[in-house]
Image (cartoon, rainbow over all chains, first blue to last red):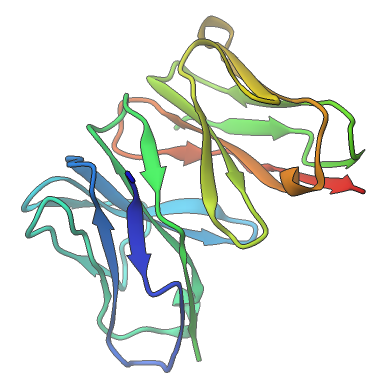
Length: 113
Length: 108
């Protein structure tokens, strides 16, 4: 089954404790991205990647890192999480950017206390 | 940048009723998708519809790109249709721009 898989689905952590949210797609898509969803602010892009070893900042990249060492994986790294990073996170992938259908992961609900 | 507006913001229906959700966008787009966010937060793809009309069971969608709007039709609504419906557009940049959503509640 074609899908985008995020892990974990739910996470509660403490301020400053490094964490990684994994994202993997099995559709051989070139383009992957991360979004966060917050009440009143909607979905905003954090980072995106056009292909292996090619990443760039989205609208709200501060406090996040990404890497794209393999085509299928695009992990989101929070080096020192803070409470303002409490949010619902989504990973997305598409065959190419802009004019192809995007598929979203199940979401990761992160709480930083 | 492109603005995406959805209407109505909230909608309450009795089970079995029909509804039309609207998405207006302020500039030409390469891509438009409709999503359903269920009560568990998952974003479910409904339609990839940069132009034209598509149908999938009780749901159908129409995008008129030249007039910069898209419509999502839900017929014979069921309680499982409850949630938030988003349209999202892509205009050649490397991101989707989401509308503010329509929150739908279907009552049994």
